[in-house]
Length: 109
Image (tube, rainbow, N blue to C red; front, side, top):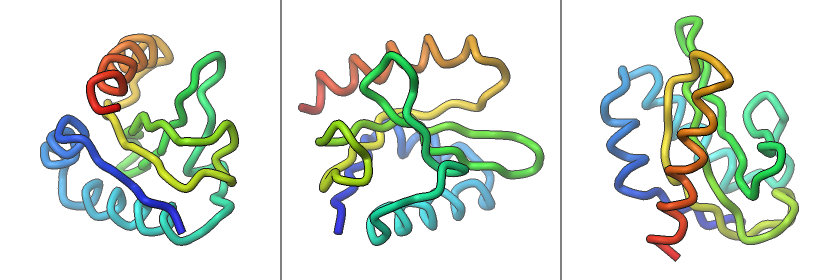
């Protein structure tokens, strides 16, 4: 249903996580590919940006993958590109990650 691209930067982030986080990431990628409407526990639109976040919860920690889609509405998109990731510690982490995602999006599009 959807084509999911994963940048080398995103894969590096996932490779540096423990096995549980890595497994959950790839399970969520399969869900995003095959299911049209994904629950908001996993995917949310980032306010005032063109990006979405994929949340991976493991061991009382949250990892966030920033991604972009080819449509203004996630439910209608046919392609998504996972750009980068970070471990969420505070809301301040988002600004840095979004700036990096913008640079990566320009690089890969």
